[in-house]
Image (cartoon, rainbow, N blue to C red; front, side, top):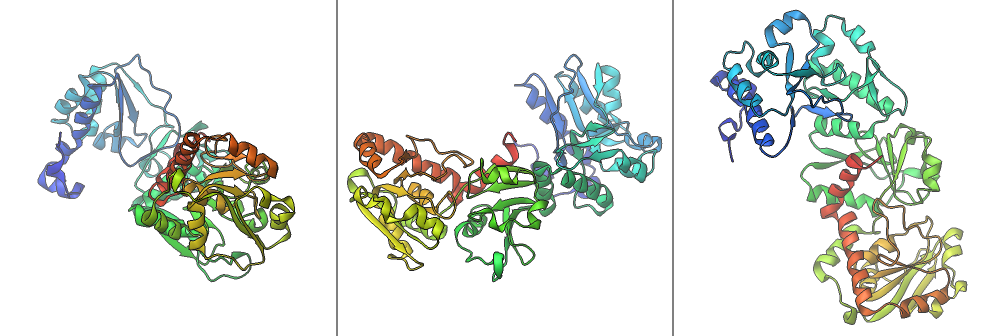
Length: 484
């Protein structure tokens, strides 16, 4: 059913000039009618509303729920006592009456709500609902007095109005008339470190999701080759029209605007004063029970994804070459790596005798690599299993690179598997070993069909979580709708 085409391309001024603004507003009633065909009740919210808390004060014994504007009488007389941007009902007759009463309303769809409350049982939502930008400037009290009614505490998540948690705010973020109100809201939610609300606000303000990446070249702790995670925002921008990148010289970290820290370094050595401004830390490398615990005094810390060393190259190979079946993989098991520091040497030294149980084992010392990166990836692709040894951090690019090609990881001690947005499952996504002799025993018990199941699960996990076509939508959904 298409009913809005006649309003396409017009704003409020255009519709007012053509005398169709009220008709357009009454599409709200049409939406309510359609919703009530299948649902027991429904709540209409204008699209310039940002929900900030659970809507849990609905009196279902009544026919109608309405929202006072909390503005001065002179403006009530002009525009109506109730706001037209919020209305709850369970009665199928309400939307038709709203249309009928609006025909003679002194102010479009809004003043006619006064007629609705005279004809139906109703309740009023409290002043912590539908907190409008007009409340700051059109109330009986001064803007300063109204502003004092808003409170928050550091890291407390909620912002309060008259000591009650705000349920949603109703404003136009890019309208200069509401600059004072919008700044006040942003300041409180920054203080409360409510990353879900802040991310939503800045999506509205910027009209896109903005990923901030440090502009190279930088020196010291800011220095980076712009590979690894920092290739992913480029790919995510290409795949998603509502994602953009800004390169900044004022940070050494990667962010989702305004202050979600996407921490992409291998250890916490790079944690600096800037990190204290984060409202959420997504922890790439490391373990949420180790490094995550060390950061939780700052704000909420959540496990994140991990990524290949060269995501662009890997995606190119996947598109060009695809996956191999069991019988097409010429190598049973493989490890290709090196060690450049004592931490890596501790976990990757050949003294551990992995060479005795891994079909193709290459571990070199220093920064020189035995294969080009494309050769390395192609070798992972042509193996059934890949050994994963801990690197400088408790995650390594190798784990996700293997899964990208459906090569089943063999996880050795010290490799983190559950600190992901979607944790890896032993026996489905990987095999766990504690010593070299475990490898032969574990592999001997895996049939071709079981390997195919695990290979498919690994590939699917990579596609959902890391591959650029799906990575952003999965990540932002976890941020906005996750349980914390």
